Amino acid sequence: MDLACSSLQAAFLRHDDSLVPPGHQPGEDDPAVYRTLLESTRAIPWKIDWATMQFAYIGPQIEELLGYAPSTWKTVEDWAARMHPEDRDAVVEFCVAQSQAGTDHEADYRALTADGGYVWIRDVVHVVRKENGDVDALIGFMFDISERKRTEERLAELQRELERLSLSDSLTGVGNRRMFDTVVAREWASAAASGKPLSLVMVDIDFFKSYNDYYGHLQGDECLKRLARVLGEATGPNAFLGRFGGEEFVLVLAETNADDAMRVAERCRMLIAEEAIAHLRSPHGQRVTASFGVATVVPTGGIDVTAFINLADAQLYQAKDQGRNRIAAVDRASIGGEGFKLQSR
Image 1 (cartoon, rainbow, N blue to C red):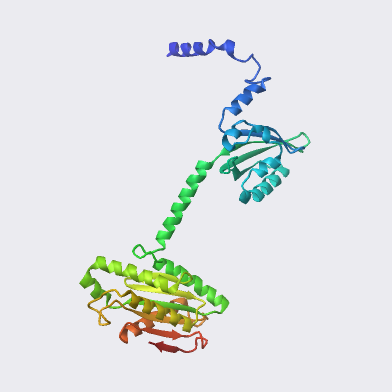
Image 2 (image 1 turned 45 degrees about the horizontal axis):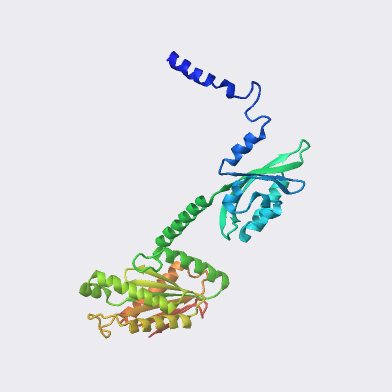
């Protein structure tokens, strides 16, 4: 053990002649050493003189990264001009404020490249002060963080996709029950604040159990997907369409009065008829049909969102009790919620 230590120490001691003289630090009185170290890294060093706002130095790596020669980096205007327009104002304002306050800081932004692209940069800035406390210079490093940003964007995209999947029905692609609960609560609060009517349409496929028994569950799934597409076409992008459960769908129609809600339901019923999906066990022309329950209300203290949903659901069951393939509706909006105006067709 002693022999090994002695040999190791001797190996280092053999290089004494190549080390700096005693009492000196490596690189002392030789700035070229530091420059070589800085320019051999992927980080890009720079220095700006505070009084003139001119670059005193920028590493040659900048040309490989952005395509601009170091000699073209003359003032802070060059730095700002080579920044993505969407980032420029906010980043420049932040960096100027932090520098004036004498605060070290970091900023992420997209730097424009000479060929018209951009690279994500992280600028790490240190404020150098004079003995009296005034700002003397800014020194820092630019780091290429493009790969990190791409990774962050991919993760964010995956997160959005997970959120979308958690709020959509996996079979039909429309909103799921969780999404419906969120949307109807939001629209209820909005309608209560604005005093405008809110309508709900519950949709149930007629004799769907018989359809599954006769055609099988795989064909039943295809039927649900086709119905979801038809309902989406009938209601348009401004309405919410969700699968309430099983063969039931639900439409949330914001700022929609009772007459307009009835027209939407009738359009859905007509388009389902035009789709002409065969259903040999249905008494309605041996085609797939649906029943509709419609409720309209201006939210007040006399009814809550759960009661509103139950109101629409009750109309759906009334339509089914009356023979299916029809619409039953109740309007509490036109009479302040004190009574009912019923429709059925």
